[in-house]
Image (cartoon, rainbow, N blue to C red; front, side, top):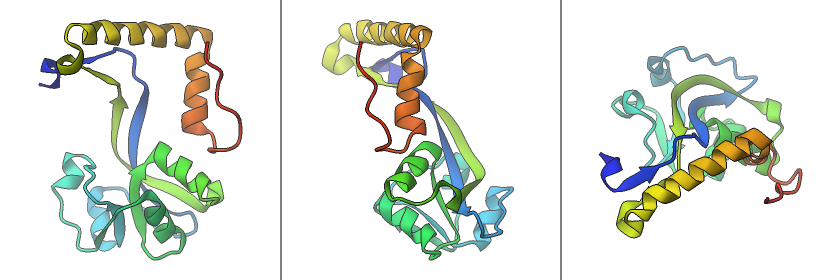
Length: 168
């Protein structure tokens, strides 16, 4: 339905993997969403975490308003588990100077490809052209290694550990 007013490119930017996170030394295991019902959970207020999670009721679910608050609650052992995307969690935990081995992902709730969208309302027919041009950029960047470098910088790298990739 969104394609009526948006144009998309074909190459994914990344995959958004929503995970359940715990302290590495917690001993907690999660094999099914049902396992969360007995745990204290924190998640971002207003976020959607996938149809299976969103339709469930969790008796000990705290809704928070910032990623910093979410991660600090877990780090300070005020909550059993939190829900956050893999890449955002790794980036923000690093930004907050937590050691990478302090936390572990326990369970994957959803995995979805991520794309940019170009508005047909704003750009008209140009939206499809922009999507195609961006797709070609991604193809070229994948061939010459720039896409790997960009993904590595923004997704797999602590936020201040190296300079941004150079534009070509």
